[in-house]
Image 1 (cartoon, rainbow, N blue to C red):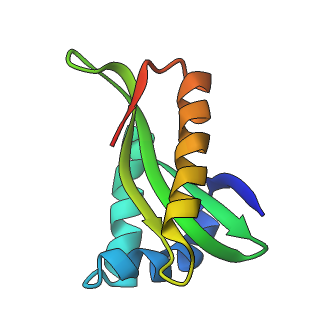
Image 2: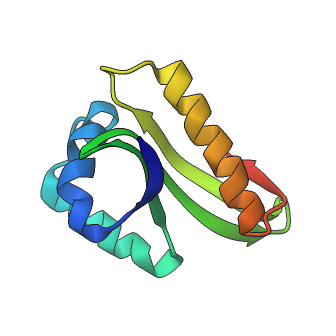
Image 3: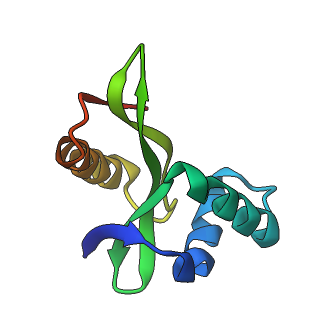
Length: 109
């Protein structure tokens, strides 16, 4: 098992998990939105077990007056077949480290 950044070649792996939360999003719309979000440095992170995606997080480092430099978490979704408490905590711990590495003051969910 590993937590890592997902790339555009893995969109077919991400889409089925994403539709558990956003059930009306087609693959085409999902792909279009991901490509639209690239300009804002949107990152896709995942907990992977071999080629199976367990948890997905969509994040971006932002700077605002309110939150200063922070890691904004747009999506945090764990596959319904897995223990969401366990895997969400694992991803949150990873996001805390990811934010520190990115010199962020905090993580905003």
